[in-house]
Image (cartoon, rainbow, N blue to C red):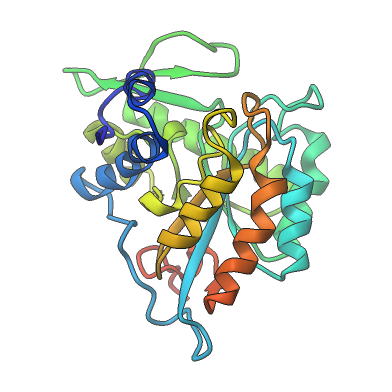
Amino acid sequence: MVCILRTAPAICKAKCKAKAGLAAALLCFSVAASAADAQLPGTTNVANATNTNAASKSCRGTIYLTFDTGSQSQAEFIASTLRKYRIKASFFLANEKTTRGDYSLSPEWGGYWKQLVADGHAFGSHTFDHVYVQSDAPDGRIRLKPQFGAQAGQSLLWTPAQYCEELKRVDQRFLQLTGQHLDPYWRTPGGKLTPGLSAAGAACGYAHVGWAPAGFSGDELPSEKFSNASLLQRMLRDLKDGDIVMAHLGIWSRRDPWAPANLEPLIQGLQQKSFCFATLREHPLYRLKK
């Protein structure tokens, strides 16, 4: 079973649970994210892109690690692991509640983000209040529901300009915290797009970044049903040149966290296959002009 991205996340998850096994759930979560980028206007297909320039002669290909904010429970571990292996990744930021009791873009996290900037990573917007899209309205507005902030849980109708401001709120806060602007990248919470939302992001100057089917880490799935070992095995088997990997800096609901068990073995396994790593700044579809 494959869920398309226009399917509401809750419905998609429910359908996945009705199907037994790892493959069905992973398809539901990950094929959708890349399929929408290929089908909707103003977006690009990131799943099958290959990098002809970023990989050196010693590289079989390039993998692009990306991390979305979340509970931040694994944020320090992920940063130190990337530093240990001298790997550059890309981060998508929203102002999410953390296990510390603060928020991921609060001043307390300024030092963390500054260090990641110094380490050479790339950064994009994940919407400030982690805003989920619901549908396009007939009048050109977009129906959305923020997860955090003053309007959390409310179904709202925004113009494309209002959505653009939401994307830029992350950039403004990031500039305050680090002295640097975001890169012109954007990822919707849940990876869901609509034609109206896609057009709004493109008009705002942001390129939407999904992930490859094989790049879905599975860190959002219940560990009771989807073990870290099975998720790691699938990624090492299926990842290929040009694939974008998506994981989080912490997930509230997963009992057995993905990153401590899988990030280092994933890096080591891919390096043993002669894969290299780069930020989205080097991806052929998102490479920044110099």
